[in-house]
Length: 531
Image (cartoon, rainbow, N blue to C red; front, side, top):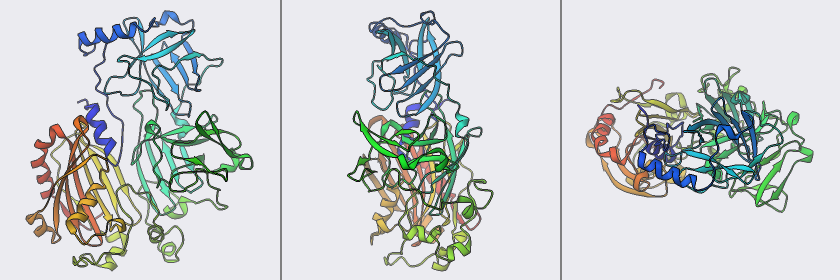
């Protein structure tokens, strides 16, 4: 079953994760399911822009092209593929197909219609979207003029990302592109493992999570910068910023004595003394010559004399299965900077849904999970359930944190429904004497889209009796029009921890899911066994 691309994107764009989206475009103009009348109209509009290029218009089977902004395009006619490298280094491969004899690039997913004709344009060529949508400044192809390149572009091999990488803050990634998996570790004691994605739509490999991030490699393939989708600014609490170096060997691949920033053509660039990197949006060049985000974090801070070693925390088999061992007791007890407790006290951030541990508020709810048990992350109960009424579900997030909290997410085969199971430590930023308001605030952390409407919050008597903790069902919607989704959330507070089990579904399927969500919640139970 093919996923509904638009709705699938809506769910993932508003949730805690993102993954490859199966586009369900109309294949306009190629006779593979598109509306014939619409196809004729849009093709005629495209033809009105100029001569559409065919295979016979190219002297070579493999040709390279370069845009004024530095973007590169490699066309491989026999293979029916292309590679596109943006001006800031994002690179991906996609399909090069035909509409009769005319060449068509299949790029991105613009409302499910991603056909770009190649037009002859003043001695070069111009990709033109079938419906005439305008291009964007962050490396989108539409209506960009390309001239023949002096040198042939090298086709992208994603395996160059394989191995371990680290930035100056100690944030570490381990990529396995054969398995399309990535593990990450943060010095505050957070470790997780998840999927990498490549829609093979010309946009390239990306990582899911709170942000959709594309690794943008240097020319030698030994360093990269993470760029958010669409050129959005990085989250101000992101630690995975700056330049990542293979094996954290900054001194081997950079020359920090000659590093610096510059502004050119309204863009900010950083040179590490060897390679130059475009800086994502959201950074400003200060009087001291450094670039800072809105939270005052430097894009390229000074590297520590002793780099962070994930293996010292997680064991020599890091990254293993991505869950790792808990922080060693002696390390946590000696107050080292890598202990989970210190990370929470410092307010450092790397968790999308789970908030930092904090003092429990005096709200009359009692200490339902004893403090000594809460301090031992191995004994935090896990919220489990019975068999789900779906087949072919795909796991899109499976994170286990050093303090015992976790976040799991699965999506149905049709791409219309997401299930999220998470437990978060009591959030110091959401303290409230009003239990209902507190649980609404917690549920909203699952989806912080700007357009939001609370539908209801009601205490469920049967679930409250079953769990011996107050259980509420929170219902709210986010987004607008075809981008809207409905959340139905099981929310239970135990004073030390807050459990959330959210069912998020496209509005067209929401009514049918109401009863199913209640059935799922009725099967939930707490267990001390590992998830």
